[in-house]
Image (cartoon, rainbow, N blue to C red; front, side, top):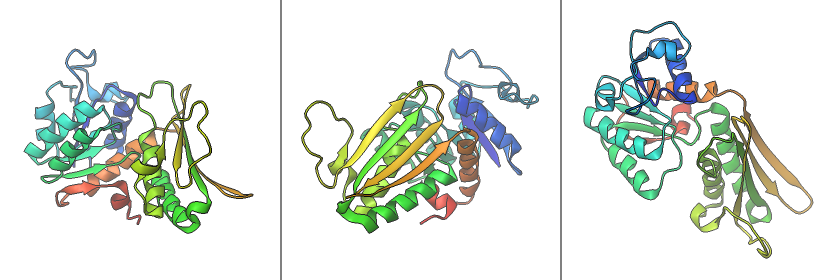
Length: 266
């Protein structure tokens, strides 16, 4: 399967090149970076610390996407929307690990998914998707007698907050309670906020150092507390999950899918 990497120069881009090269039956068919990037023209294998693969990093996203069976994309929302439209034109599956989308971007991705298979996830690791499934079940079982707080920490360079994974866990908790997260989400607390409103789902965001990603869902009740935690120590788990998703899309009907579909987790 021919898989291309969008945004090859970043930490995830290099991990993705390595993961695709190591996956049986897969090859890195191309890789992109923005115009002006110092890595343009560089061999993608050397960029990822591998032996040369004979393919150079390109700024021609349309050509790279058209030559691939699937693209993997951990870039920024504006670029991801552009890539989704190009992928829809060429019939190329799109694996999206980018986070921080607004409604217009979400709508554009959904429109592209009418023509191609898109797998979009705030986190592509098996462990986190299992955590989301467990969070939904626990939220449903405990109900409003337990307050839900989601704490996440990432490296100092992360640009969106809360993380896509934290929001995914919030959605899982809201689904378990049969409520809309937007109506019950608390992102900021400062000053005299008054007592906590029953049914709210709170988010706390921490940033610092080189933390890959820590997420904890806290269910706090009267006299007891349940904490569900996932800690990522290697970005390779996200890259391997993305490659698994790309392989899964082969022959798949158009649609907007999640990693739970890929992993068969309900």
